Image 1 (cartoon, rainbow, N blue to C red):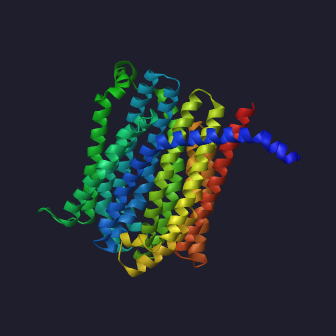
Image 2 (cartoon, helix red, strand yellow; image 1 turned 120 degrees about the vertical axis):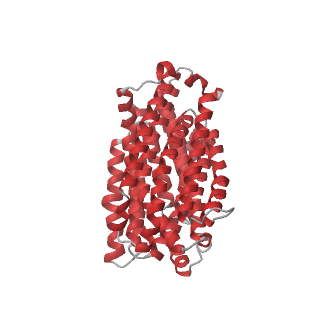
Image 3 (cartoon, rainbow, N blue to C red; image 1 turned 180 degrees about the vertical axis):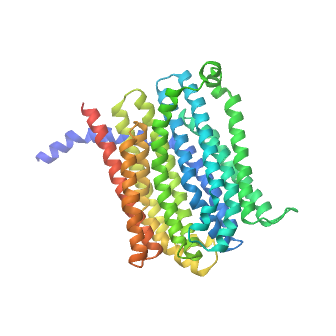
Length: 464
């Protein structure tokens, strides 16, 4: 019997055990992630629905929507990053079985996120004239400014809804927010139908109508989730101690900000890279802007699944981190990364195969369709790195490692991705595709760094 065969007989049972444990952990993460993913997809679907319904009016309206969404996306996702601190600290306290601390983090986190939402909304409203200085089509800018003002107001109920969602997600109660997110879709479609096109006697408001529909929808789901958390028995143990725990505490804010600020910067720098790319592409004309928005909308839709996986993995890792169970942390992390790799590969194949069909759901202009189908090839290329970098960042947040990842994410996108993309787009004449190549480079570097750092940190902890 050969030495290799003897070794395989000895190792095989252990390989099977490890694979079985990896499969079990992946299954648990997917079970937690599924409602989160559905909720994220429902929220992204609202943007896609708005884009498609506005695009049916005209491609200039579509370009105006793209300009506003690209411009406000950076401050908006910074707010979302702040809400992530709630799920991280709640899941940490939940892992320690400390219900009073859960309630305390929830209250302080909600107040912090409310303040963040008000500041972000105010900045956008008072800074709307920036659209006149971005080198965009004047007609597009004129359409964009009223829409931008309405969307700024809608950020407040949306971030508060996200805060409540992060609280329930941190406790691994993910279905309620999912149901509300899914229910918001037909509501938003109906309101769009009424306000964009002026049905049932309402004035035809076109792009502004889409903004009002979004504001109303976001307000309704925020109020609904708030009432459920305050009154449902599932959350009663955390609400019942509000008299003692619902007090503002400076140290608690420091803990929340320690996670929230780097998380906001991480997400903001990535979203900012895409937003700035969209603005730069917009200087090439309305056709390039609309095509970019179509390809980006498709890529953003698939990214929501990665975000859901990242959040589920982060919550489970944070829960294990509360017990300092490093073998469990490593197992959860590796299984989630493998899941992301498989998912990213499937998305890449789908985009490449359907690149000619997907843009037709958004617009009928032949120039827009041709360029959008071409950009979808670039979107296909970065699906794997986009998915794995999101998971890597989420896993590192789960073990409260946020500073170094934030620095490297900044390097990946803003020192490598955007400058290289700009050079390719304008100096080498690649146009919109040059900016997308820059994004691919940034995402790839970020993915390699984040995954390597997580695996190294967990390996060192398990050895020690």
